Image 1: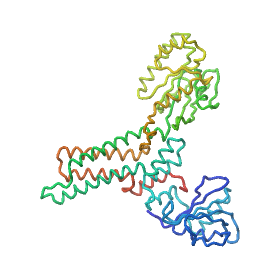
Image 2: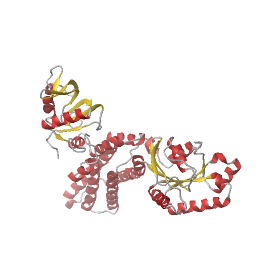
Image 3: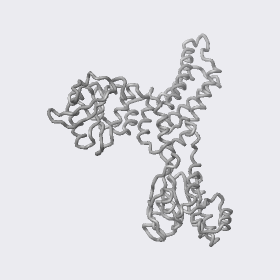
Image 4: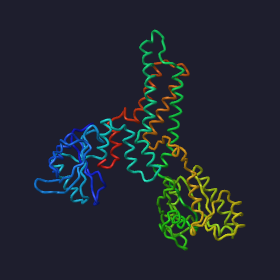
Length: 465
C-alpha cells in the first residue's frame, strides 16, 4: 500500500491565523521543496542536515509568495519514515492555497485523510493501535481522554498485547513441533507452564475487556438527562452546573420546549447534560413533542437526574406520594440507569421539612440551583458513577471498539485452548485455536491487517495528519 508519490497537505487548522504549516512527505519532498524555496543564505536544501530549520522565501518563478521557515526531517528519522518537509508560512488562506497549488504543479499530490500516519504505520514507525491513538489524541477534549491517548500512543496497550502474543507464539511453535514428531508421541511444550500462561493471558484479557466500560465513558463522555415536572428548576440547574446562562429560565411552566445540551468536564471526565422539557399532561402540540423527546433522551442517557421542587412537597403529602410513584416508574422502566433524585429550592424549607423529605425519599440530594448551593455535592455524586481508579493508577484502559471486539474474540479462543488442554485435546486441534487467538492479537497491533481495515481506520483522520 505504500505509495511512492510525494504528498502535501495543510497540517494546521484551515482558516486564517498567525502562521500555517504545510507538510510534504515522500522521496521527492526535498527536491520539490528545493525548486520553490530560496534560502536567504543561499543554502542548497538537499545538502542540509536532518532536523534543521531554514529561513527563506517561497518563489513561483520570479514571484515571491511568502517568507517562510522550512523544517527538514530526513528518512528514516521522521514521523512518516520518509523525507518530510514542513513549511511554516504566514496564516493567510490566500498564501496557504498559493503555496499548496505551486507544490501540486511541481509534482506533489494532495494527501488523503490520515495518509501521513498511514505511511508512519506502513514504514514501521507506529503500530496500528498507536496510529489510532494519534486520532484519539487530536480529538481529546478533557484531561482523562488525553491521558489515555498519550499512554496508548507511547505503546502501553500494544506493548502488553505484543508481549502476550510473543509468549503464546513460542508455545504455538512447540505445539507445531510436536505435530512433526506425532508418531514418536513426544511433548515439547510443557503443559504446566502452558496452563499458567493461558491463565495469565485470560486474566489480562478480562481486565482489558472490563476497562472498556470506563474507557468508552471517558472517550465519549457520560450523557446525563435532567428530567422532572415543569418549573421545578431544570434549566436553572443546568445553568448552575455550567456556570453560565445557557438555558432560558422563566416562572411560566413549559418554557423549555426542546432539549438543550451542553458539556461540562468534572475532574477530567466529560459529562453531557441534557435539559429536557418538563414531563406533564398537556394539550399543547409543541410542548407534547418536547415531552416525547424527553423520553427519547432518557433512553440515551446513562445517568438520570430527577429534579423535584422540595418546597411544594412539604406543603402537600399528595405531591410527595405522586413523586414517589413517578420515581418507581422510572426505576422500573430504566432499571440499569443510575438515578439521582434532587430536591431543588432547599433554601426555602426548614430543617424539620428537610429531615421529613430525607426520611420519605432515601438518598435525596437537597440543593438550591438558584443560589448554587449543593452543586459541588452533585458533581461528586456524578463522579462516583465513574470508576476512575484505573485511570489514577495509570493502568491500560481500552477505548477503541475495534480493540474491544478483537479482545473478546481472542479471549474466546484462549478459553477454547484452555478447555482443550484440560480435556487432553490432540495437539493439532489445539493448534487451530492458538492460531486464531494469535490472529486476533495481531489485528490489534497491525501484524494482521488488510486494505479495507486500514481504509476504515484512516478515513476517520483529518487531512494533514
